[in-house]
Image (cartoon, rainbow, N blue to C red):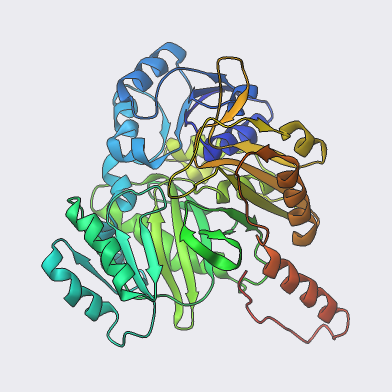
Length: 445
C-alpha cells in the first residue's frame, strides 16, 4: 500500500512512525514532512496550505490512501479537493471539519445531538461581552473560560479567575474581527479520546490525557500541549463505551443526518466533572501530543484501519489492540514559547536520547544549509518513553528530554507524575486487600 501523509509536525511524525511498523510495510510519502519524517518516508515540497500542490502530488504518486494530519488544510477543504480528484482520503470534508473550525457551530451540533457540554454564550460584538461573562459566571466565583471561535493552534483559550484578563483576551479577539465563546468552567480531570469514523460507525482508540499549561503544576499560559500519557489508571470503568454512546456516535449521527458525513478522527476532549462527563471541545483530527502516546501503544496495524474508514467500511476493519504497559511523552519547547517562540537554534542529543530507549518525535524542526538540525517552531520535539508502568515510562521520557540540548528550551517535569503515584498506591493497596475490595479515588493527573 502507498500512503501519502500531509503535514509537518509531531502528529504526522507519530502517524508515519506507526504506519512504518505495519506489516507488510507501506510505501510512505509526506508533504512536506520534517527531518524526523524524512528518515521514514519520502518527503515532497508541497506545503500544508497549498491545496493545488497536494492534488498535483497525489496525481504524480497515485497513493492508495491520503491521510491529512493538521486542522488548517482540513478546514480549508484539502480532503474535498483530493476526493474530487478521485483519491481515497482519511480526513473530514471542510463542512465536517467546521466542528473544529467553529466552536459555536460545534455547540449547535452538540445541542442537537444531546451531547453533554458546558453552558456557553457566543459573543460577536464588544457591547455583548460584559453581559455574556455575567451569564456564564453568574456567581463570579469560578474561573472564566474564553475561547476564540475559530482555529487558534491550541492557544486561543484563556482560563482565568481574573475577569479583567478574560475581558482583555475576548476584546483582542473581537477587535481583530473574530468572535468568542464564553463557557462555564468545568471542574475535574480532562480526558482525550480519538474516535475513528467512516461517516456512520465509530471505533474508539485508547484514552489519553494531555497537559496544556506551559509550566509544572499546571502554571503558566495555555499552549498547544506540553506532554501526554496513556493509559489512564484512574479512569472510571466503562469510560470509553460511555463516550462512544453519549458523545461520539450521537455527533456522527447528527452530522450524517445533516448530509455532512464525518470521515476521519473525531477528537473528543472531555472533562469528568462532579456533575458527570462533559465535552470541552471537538477537534477534527488526531491530537498533538496525545497521538504520540496513543499510537505508541497501538499493537494492531494502523494503515488498514484508516483505509477502511476512508472507504466508509469500518465494519471490515479489525478492532484495535493495544500493547500492555504505558507511554509518556514530554514536549521540548523553544525559548520564548508560547508567546514568541525563537527559531534557528541548533539541536543536539537526539541520538543520545534514542540510545537510552526513548523515541524522539520531530514537531518543529528543520535543517539549515549545512544540514544541521535546528528549531523551526514553538514545540520542537516530543520525547516518548514506554515501560511496564507509568513511572517507568515517564522516567525514560524525562531522561530522553534531559539528553537533548536546545538553547533556552524548556520542558515540564511533572507529566503523568500524579497518575503514576496513583497507580503505585493502588497497586500497593491491592496487595493488602481481598479481591472483593475496591479502591478508586478517580485521581486526576
